[in-house]
Figure 1 (cartoon, rainbow, N blue to C red):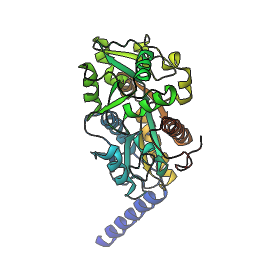
Figure 2: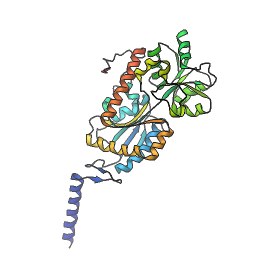
Figure 3: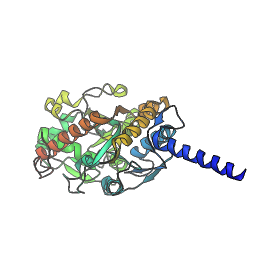
Figure 4: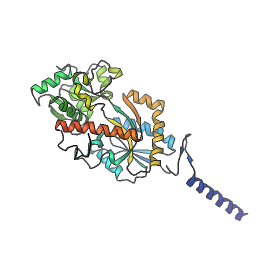
Length: 343
């Protein structure tokens, strides 16, 4: 009897192994994950700190994707170096789909700014979540009521109009390069340690203006403490339709649009395409969940939902537009050829 039991257990184990190697493994959802992937938990590395914009978008999305994958996505914040600490860390891991880079737009400028020798060209996009509209903002007591008035004042007295920034490579610095490229105006850039403190400097009147994401400034705008003078967008923001588009005052700005900070999930280049497809399908389903769409609406994120070539084309266009402006404004000295970018 023991011998028969042993034979039965051996056959059962063998059949289980054959099924695991050759068939589809059904996860906790209706979707089937091909092959062995994922056979263990996945690590999700967030470029920025807990509670920030990137963190707030990634954690709920990862939670929903877990249900599709049938494993946990263990989230970890690795901050520093304008997101480069996390980017380098993920690049140093195996290209097996078990370490995800969950980040924003910053890596597209790393080589241009000599931060590290990596960009998103060294990764594969799994899923692009969305991008944000940004605007030029001043405090409620500002003497400036339009972007043109700020530009004219800066042209009349170069370097005297103060802009609160988050340093080289940060959002206000990037957009100011666009402004300089189009108008020739230059500003006295004063660095702060975060978007929040840069905004606070404008609210208090310490600086003349800054560049602010809609999600970061909309409540101050509704309260009347912050004025949006112009939107870097091709379409009005629904909740702030009265704010003029930047092309209304400076039509030449259209060459750099659409533009905005974006968020996405990436894996190291060289990852098997079947693994990328499995991840992409899971995040696509998670993205479509009504609760996540509501979250995006609440944050005023312009939903993208891109995978594959559509995601790669978006990344390439964003990088070309941004670096073209940086070169034209003199913010960087490297040429497009040196950076391997075709206009």
